[in-house]
Image 1: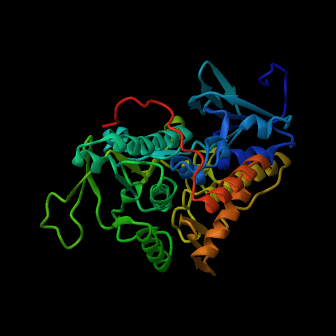
Image 2: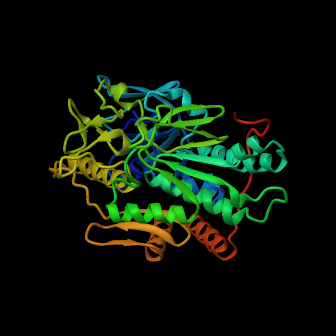
Image 3: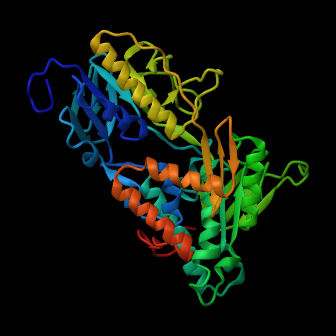
Length: 435
């Protein structure tokens, strides 16, 4: 029975999550002899790789998000539901939502991930992560509010605290976020205030490991560190967060200084978390045993062992590459997995066999700031201005919708020419402080 009450003998495919993987699967199943239901708690698809630019006031949320119905509305075999999924009844092959159940013949779990605080969930209020638009606008509010409060602050200690920003985590998100804050402070806001000089802001990037961008070759990691330091970012390697409270953070003692038992105390109002993620509750829905990051171990065809009609993709899945290592939680992996699941379902419906999933690695990129980025294509590694131009071209190209591409491109051109960012709006709660 279809959602509109009409009898249908076509296979029913339910996709939970409209991120990169889920949306790709839905688009690839459009016009095929299956009935697709796409469920997401929000009504838009978010281009997460540029979310940090919303947090740093470089782009507006509408620049990197597009309504799901606007993408799939004309696909007649696809139904879009905005609802929260509560669980899965695998025995009855039903997805449980708020107030209703949706039957399926094939289920694709593409539910993404949330922030992981490694057992310190109480830190979340002080150190928000960056996974959704609400996170980005909250971080933007905290950053811009800190400068506004510093403009009126007469106490030197509190002034310094307001002008200090700590980013935790040296992966691509942390590196991009730290660089964006530095450019905002030292260029976009440089002449906007009368009492303070935003260029004197202190930005720290804290990484527990020995280098930034650990998934990149060491030479590119070193380039990223030096590029950030040229922007004025203090890079702290081999130091982990040991405390996070209303006054600031405490870092572990750096390697070679273990005698400093208390580590370093950094007083700050603004802490941003980019140190780790945890998969959604999808494993619990189907009774699967998750790994430490909450991911579901999947078979070579991305199905869940014991549930051949249930597939997990993207951040939800623990899928292994040819080298036996887990595939990274990045957009290209999710998109290729979504496309594969769609092809597998089409093949099963047609009675054809499908080869196991194989990820094709086209490379990874990260931007550090103006005219500085790194790109690793395996056979080719580039850095600097060329990598920055390539990074921008790829990201604009992958945005959905001509309006979004044009808006982002014009915003970047404007920012490049004028050194200004056009989305410096403080929205949401503004009374008092966050500390």
